Length: 178
Image 1 (spheres, one colour):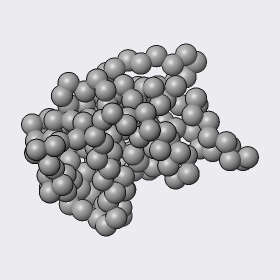
Image 2 (cartoon, one colour):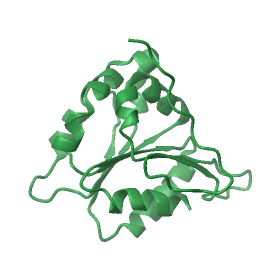
Image 3 (cartoon, rainbow, N blue to C red):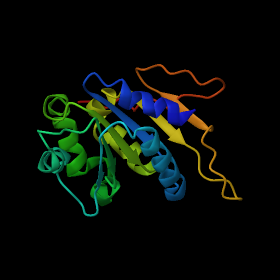
């Protein structure tokens, strides 16, 4: 299931990996997050909640980086607050794309970006080089009408090639002309 696959991204990062979790439902995201954190009790996981718009994610991460006790993974929430009206042309996405090669050097851990649908689409368009470096992409279905969390209903794609029978992969980002 999706929990197993996301957990593998954290446990198998040697030393760097990056994945994107598409989840539009905050309740489902929090349920999944709590279950995942419980499974990863033996690992140090830093959670970064971006409450305000930022211009450079790397600066935010380095400001919180503990060189003596680095985390095994960083979960990033709220990047969509920085995208704004510019959408795929936003400064934060342009900077993410430029900084893509710095992440493995400066933050050599598993990075998991938790994003709603529109933000992941904007990231794929606005930072295509960063997105192409991913270890996996996961799509979590919204809760059902009765509030059930359908954790088995996910799409998976990425270089990790984790199979999930009967599910279509996420589409690749559109080609951009330079």
